[in-house]
Image 1 (cartoon, one colour):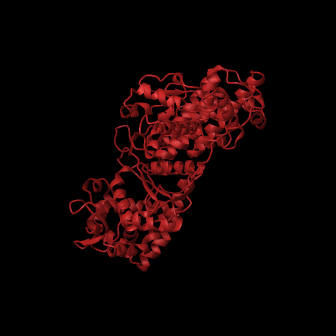
Image 2 (cartoon, one colour):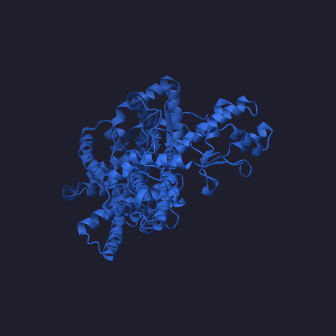
Image 3 (tube, one colour):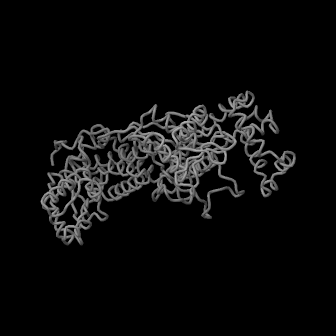
Length: 617
């Protein structure tokens, strides 16, 4: 095939999207011909049954809808599949399918010429041939959301990295994304710090390290207020304070209430502490390479809460019960969604409702995603149902709880330190970087690459934190997973280090050969894909957009990590078996194009996951 292959796939949909359109038209013809009645609203679910084949020997894509429609049509699945095949117009993208396989599988193979064209388009395109979505939306993502007066812990990692990855992926797909870190900056934790400041602060410690002193006060007062004998037994200072202040728990709530009511002293202390707390959180985010468009915490919505309650009462959605105000969504037997306590205090639900209304009024989103752990599922079900009643079904906006499971230790229980405390997030990052430094140093010594200590440390920071993030993102978000430093830093298997190393191998080819990558992209794939390992890598590479589409469909970043792992595996098979720099002519140009596209795809995929790619490994 000549170098001047026409680039007629530019701006066109992926192979899977194109094939689904072909099946849709075939099913419409099938229904029009009277073989089986298919309502228009059924078609989207039917064409989604066009998926990648599990085994490449059966082709590249397979349609399985004949099995579900056969009984309705009064035919055997295989016979109905033949009728669908007769109505398929495959243009010049797919080879004509053979007879259906098994009980009606319709398997199709991308034509070699079409695959080369798609590779050429991807190589020459800054977006690697991935077309933006046809109908972009405005999507608000609410994630991370720590309580600012408390140290961030390992439990915050999932919300933070899942939300950040989804925001990056949705933005790359062409949507307008608005990220908002809904900080807990107005709750009981501040009451604990205010009480601690008034009763047991250390002024010298605060002057030396304000963050550490506020963290100490929070941890100490939490024990005093909770008054759990087993905790007090291990902390004599807390035990002494608890004995001196038996009503500490009630007094903490009183300090919180005074803050909310505008008490001058408590408000002044809150304003003094907030910059310190925010700076500490931002420092952790900087290490994670995470940022937000907005950081509108609970305090931002505090002036709106009374109005929310009044509106819900006036519309009859909420009512009084035993002095409290609640929304009764499931009748008298089901627990209500409380929006104001009997003592007049507002709740998380009140703030969440105010937040929804404010976001709709100011940002006009099509979707709002809440990346929050699965234990809050009932809360969000009630909040969303209340918001729909209150806001007249919210119009077109879709509210989604993107739930996730728990990070577990080796014992299968929530990940904690040996002392039983929740693992601090920064301690987790430090440990990851320390272990990565050992791996990087050992590799540098073995290969004799002569990196400086600063280079090793910089690479270790990217590898260690990238490993932690990737290990989380590679899990199905709805499941719990066991945290393991040893597994996540391995250079084999589905790990960030393996992906980063794969990119380094690609970069090594171009560095060793002194190759001009601009020229590679200009020439692109100059010949046919003669080796099956070339073809396997090519078909994997042109499916990048399909992987991103699947991530959006169910908000699962692990579908992208699985895709990247598959590409890295296909590249490893290709690289180990076929010469690149020693190849000649069209074969060399084609293999260099595949290498270039592999490196760009892996790098882009990792960056969409929020994971850096070090310049060396």
